Image 1: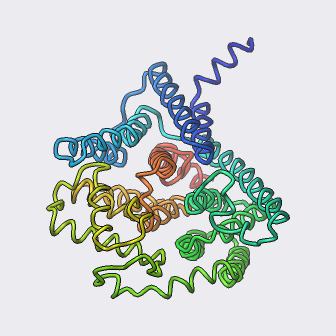
Image 2: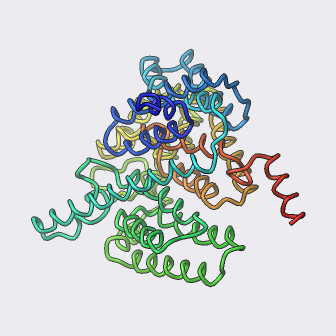
Image 3: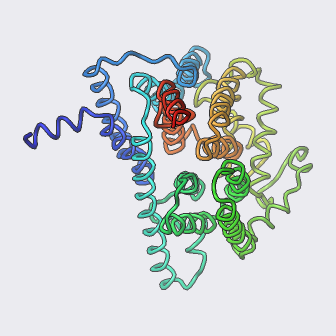
Length: 425
């Protein structure tokens, strides 16, 4: 077979599409254009694959829900208070419609293709992690400040948010933890990502990691218990040490200064108010409550990407810092409710519930942790209103949906044959 024919044969296999998905995920940290181009290439070759192999659209409620959500986005254009903003929003979030539709054209993912995506995605994340650490070391020798190893400063070379990098690195961590037969290399990499997440100092990620320990123990009853206990003790020890460190500890202690009752009742905050991450998010929820009561947004919302001016107006009323005037809700549920209305919120929660049901049926640790990570992250960030968060969520959501449920490498008939074979044996 000639080289050209070999290339054509490779392009015509689903394995090639797995590499393209990896390319999309692996370019999220280096800018909007690379991941957008990679996404377009993936969609093109997926449609081509479907036409060549004459695949039919698979009706799957998991994939229908995000499509319905995007259609609801489109409907808000008719009542949006900022139609130009909504049109921009529809362009930016179109993958919520395109990606589930694309996955509906493709056959289910095999275990091999599933692993291709996450194995190479994890390898790229290792390179990113090493790069961030090397840059931090160089900066340390310049500044003699340990802060270059933590939070946003650790990833400032790409002008990234520590929250989004934590989210992406956590996917690799939980993938490595989900592997049944871990090598020494896997264990080292698990500790490597764990250290990176501690350095990034995301409080919500610390909470997610603690939940991950309990879920991991629950999902691995059939594996050597002593090895599980040893790994859990190692992870717990590193977490305790990390949380007790100066950087992370100070951030947790600072949050304790939040005056919750004052945030909910104070009329003017002024230019020197001691804001914390919790307090600003609580104020955003207070603003949402007022919007529901005063702007009648319960059923329809302001319109996709159309709440910004109203939020800014209310911040002016509260006399908060000028930078807060450009903030979104930092809460995906609140963002969805404000701009799309109650039905948008219901659809988003329905997507998570369906994913959780599938995940718990399979008792798949990685799938469960995907649901946990995004459900909790949605409480502190409007992930779906940012390209990194949206691309990561919808691709992983669709991959898990289109991968075999109970045994990822076998369909129902194959599992029955396997059972018969075992009984005969």
